[in-house]
Image (cartoon, rainbow, N blue to C red; front, side, top):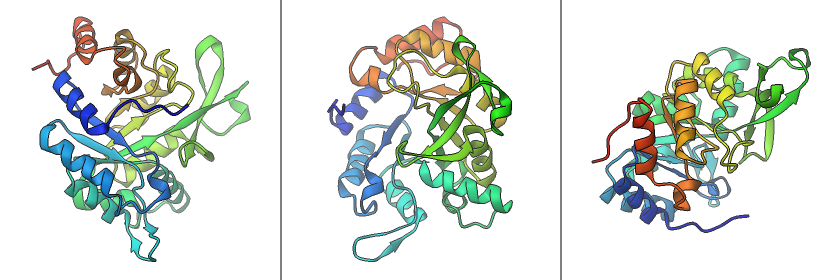
Amino acid sequence: DVRNLGKPVELANRYSDDGADEVTFLNITSFRGDVVQDAPMLRVLELTSEKVFVPLCIGGGIRDYTDTKGVTHSALEVASAYFRSGADKVSIGSDAVFAAEKFRADGVKDGTSCIEAISNVYGRQAVVISVDPKRVYVTSQDETKHTVLEVEDGKLCWWQCTVKGGREVRDLDAFELAEACEALGAGEILLNCIDKDGQNAGYDLALIGQMKKRVSIPVIASSGAGNPQHFVEVLKATDADAALAAGIFHRKEVAIAEVKATVQGAGIPCRPLE
């Protein structure tokens, strides 16, 4: 079910005041419209950047596309519109999968991918790859060419990449995607897990731990946080560079200050509350 949990500008201001280290906006409907002309989303960034001084990351619709008037816009144009409106980073989802598939097939960087175009202009640190995989359970490694790991209850699975908000799957695993995107110029991985999202049962430790072994750029753990101890668990067990949460903060089930106090109490460095 879709629920309205608040206005984005007000929530961003609240989270910044509460001590969040970064705020991420994910525009989940942007693939359907004219992104460059999405004045409300651009205005959200403009208003937020006036009062929020932690880094702002925006994801959604960063791709080459033709608008309803027949005008073609590049992924770089879309990203530039976001940056001009106050974003510090852009998060790329589906288009990163397509770019990774092409790179793996061709074996060359030709400068045409959205990742290369944006990182060449704004720097690697401005390009985040949002990885949205789902688990595919198997009985042995022999069933697939993809990396299989053991998860809860001794089960085996691999993590299949999805596009278009999880509605389509690709013959690419999360680690192959991240490695290709790093090679193309991405500077950070935002690692989600469809199976864990919204479950409040903890992060996917096997997925995140393996990802840290496969790439050298920062990995941000996402999907599954239900209490402050889950942050400690993922940061200690996987060496993730940071952990993201949304629902527990939107619903005011857990305070950011409580999470930071728990993390610091476990001996994990984090930016102190000001």
